[in-house]
Length: 568
Image (cartoon, rainbow, N blue to C red):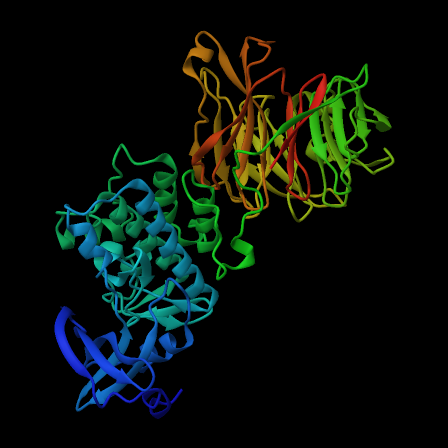
């Protein structure tokens, strides 16, 4: 867009300057009024800059979003370029946070956190990096609506852009912008915006800038070395604390995308379920925490004793029960109808279904087998895990199938996760990981992170850890459970699944030794980064397995005598 075209949008011949709204290294901002042909006098904000960047106006002219400041136009007054923007009646977010007399209830904090994320999501969806996200660059409009502003450093790009590492605000600069081999250059990606967004979340929650009171040189050096992160207050809600830590991950690629951030926002308790019309379809979670979710029971025909469960793409349910695998009709009738029975070795330890509908099992004979829909054996992966004479040195305990159809087998004897191709079954890679016990369970989310739910020796509580395919731990958390329930007892992991939006669901139950206590099973929900979102069900009889339907509409729980369905 040419400067002439942009200048011709409106006549600013009668522009009247009023009081100053702020000053900075860029220049100054004043409240202005000007006359329009149809609306009389219009109020706006005039940003006067000498070091003018044409890109700022070009980017703003293409943007239109409820949480991004609107460009009205621009014109030149001698050597000074003046950018006309909509006027924020509430001033800057930093100004509001700095005034301790202004109320800041929790719902307002979360509202601004979400609106900032929506603005960033729109920018990233339109291939724009902001590169200077902070409270000073957020404006407040009528109704406490937050909008991102100041695109003086913004760039249009698909992936990353080379920039001076000295630009931006040091408290919000990601480590990769500081710790670079070239002291004059750094590669700025959208993940640096995510890092700064995490700092903005902290600033909104604490009303203080990150690293408040610390010296510039100390902060820059320590952050650049990956040795310093801000302190999160002890009273900070778990979901926000987990979100911030993920945004500050030292490895940029391990930070969540802004779409994932918004999925966490939508899952947070206390947030409205209202979805902005400007939100992209990929960020709208169909599987959210809802009070109206229901738990229904589908009795099993004797002698089926459900111990493991998986869901097929066609809606059928697969049950592992002692020495048989049962395929049950997906019809929602009162009693589950068995359509196929597959004999296997005694004791099914784990069961999974591939995207193509193939059934993968681990049984008590240390065999890992792949069955087709008719119950015919397609592959025996056990032969690829160790020689037959070394079966005593192999202990496959749990399995999962990722979205690519690759089969993951966890071996508690060798403490390794093997990744197998499909349909050949060849070992593609080995991931060193302490599997802990036969009661471990694993799942894979859409970001190719392996969720490992386990209880380590000597521990009362179960744990969940997310690792990538190289074995690096991304995050971990300890599931919540009533401490009174666990006095003298232990919590055993019984299942873990992820929905299409990476929300995490787990099943736990209380045991003493190998004896399960009846009616002590819990179903929990956590955010994609491990923030606790609630106990969906408790007092389950003897839950032994957890699955999620392919369409993400429900969870299926194997509860010995019944299949429990938790509608989402």
